[in-house]
Image (tube, rainbow, N blue to C red; front, side, top):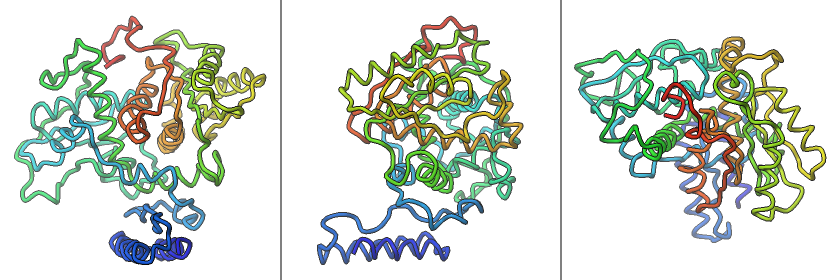
Amino acid sequence: MQKHAKALVQGSMARNASTDEIATLCEGLRSSAATSNASGGADPCPSCTRPRFVPRDVAAHQHEMPGCTSFNLWTSLRPKSPLALQIAASQARCAEQVAVTGMNSFGMGSDFQTWTLKLCKAVEQGKVLVTQGYWIWTDKSRCDELRHRPPLHCYFDKLPRLPRRECASPPSHRANWSARLFEYSCPSLVDDASSASRQAFQAAAAEYLMASLSPWLVQLASMDASTSVFGPAGPPADMITCHIRWGDKDSEMELVDISSYVRAVSKLVRRHALTQPVSIYVTTEDPHALEAFIAAAAGYPWRVLNYAPSVSKRRSRHGPANDAMATRGRAGTQSIIALLLALNARYYVLSTASTWSRLINNIRLRVVDRECNGCTDMVDLRPCDALNLSSSIACA
């Protein structure tokens, strides 16, 4: 029954059926399974449906996609924490006032960080935050058809946009928020002097953002996970994600040496009595960092995994933004896929002085940990608040 159900749904997806058609078919199959009890209590229908927009490279391999196993979460995620729900409700309103901002076009983690500061300000002032303009991280090869939509909508197509067709009338006032923020300006939501308060809003904003993921991106990540990283069996149990931020980060902080990452992984293996061989997913844009970790891990019974497209082809010292420009934004797709793959782990080695590590940790806390009933653990090799950095944006 279950194989037949999946075949029916996948056939519907292949002929480009609408989401409503697939949902109706699923509901009928579930009712039938419940009546006959043929499925043994399992849901006979895959939970993913065909997205409204599917890039050509995804559509061409639609039949090869796995059954949305570990990626179910991202197609059905909804904000659940009180602060994320408050953000979502605020941004879904047909407000009289909107705030229009561009994206900075620096590192992707830094750009999300600045967007978070403006999101907090918008919620505080009762405005809806809308992004407009050019963004170096927009993948021009996949999202060119959407070039008139806001920059974040390539990857997060449920965020607010203009015009707001669901609203009876357009907003009466549009504020220009193009200036970059370096600190929180939303005192009812965040005490800027409190790292715990800042972190709480960051995590809620990350939860809200991930609930807005574009379905095509989740499908592409699922396909790449099966064909290039984990194999058809899916993510390994008890996987450890290790984020290494090298590259040009030495201009802001002392880089964490590879031996520290190896010791941290060993610490998690011992702490949780993990069965060897342990799978270590290394996410980094720096080829030197990946090579150094593989060499250092050679004496351990570990299986090192990596999403190769997210690693820069340039071996000279440079920042991630350079890769975004050189690839016409393709590095943006690759970075978010690498992020989704990283979030299949139960254990994490991070350095939250990096905005990307901070994003991983916030999603871990607000989404992954919640979904697995508090099963995750993290070692922070470079805590953000332990650094003496000149700009408060660094640990915002």
